[in-house]
Length: 293
Image (tube, rainbow, N blue to C red; front, top):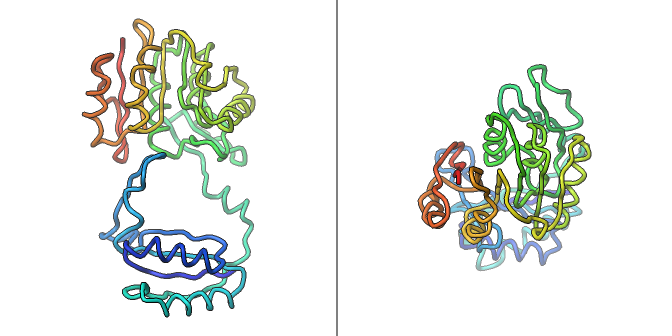
C-alpha cells in the first residue's frame, strides 16, 4: 500500500476527503497538521452529535491506495481542481509491511489505576507492584483503562472501604467498571448497554476475569442500587438524569464520568432536582462527579 499526504485548511477537508474516496482511496484519515507544536488544537465531540468542526485550521489528510500509480494519479487530479487552491501535496510514500497484531499490542501497555491496581492486557506480564488486576484486551467496546474517565471511575471504586449492595454499571461498554466493582467485593452487579456487542464483550471479559455479573440491555436494570456508575458523555448523562437517580438507593452513590471540566455546572444543574453532585476527581480536562442519596 501507498500513503498519499496532503495539507489543507479546515474548509477543504470535506471536499478533499470525498474526492479521495471517489478516486478509490482505501481509507482517508484527518489529523492536526500542527500536532505536537504550540499551535496544536483539541477538538472535543460527542457520539450522536454533529462534529464540532470538519478538521483543524491546518489539517493533514492521509489516504491509502493499493498502488503507487493510483496514489500519484489521485494527487495530479486533485492538484488540477479549483478547490485545491491553498492546499499542498506533501508526497507519496510506501507503507511498510508490518506485523499489525504485534504493533497494535505494543500500543497497549499495562495501565496503572492506583499503585497496586492495574489493567493488564493478556499478552503482558503483571507488574510486580500489582495487588489487584483486571485482564482486558482492546476490543469493539469502550473501556480499556487508557482513557482518564475510566481510570477515575476505577480509582473511585478502589478507594471505597468495600463495594457492598447492588451495583449498576449503566453504559457498560467493555464491562470494565462492573468487573472492577466485582474485584473489590461487589457480588450483585448489573451491567447494561444499548449496544449488544458491548453486552457480549462484557460477558466475555467478566468470564476472562473470573467474576460474576448480569449483563444485558438497559431494561435489565431494575430497582434500587447501592452504587450506580455511568461513564458515558455529558449529553446522554443529562437525558438520563431522572432514570439514573431513580436507581440510587438511600445512602447509595451515583458516580458519573465522561464530563469535561467546562461542563460541570450544567451537569450539576440538570441533576440538582434529584441529587447534589460534586466534583470528586479530575484528570486531563475530564472530571468525575459523585453524589450520595
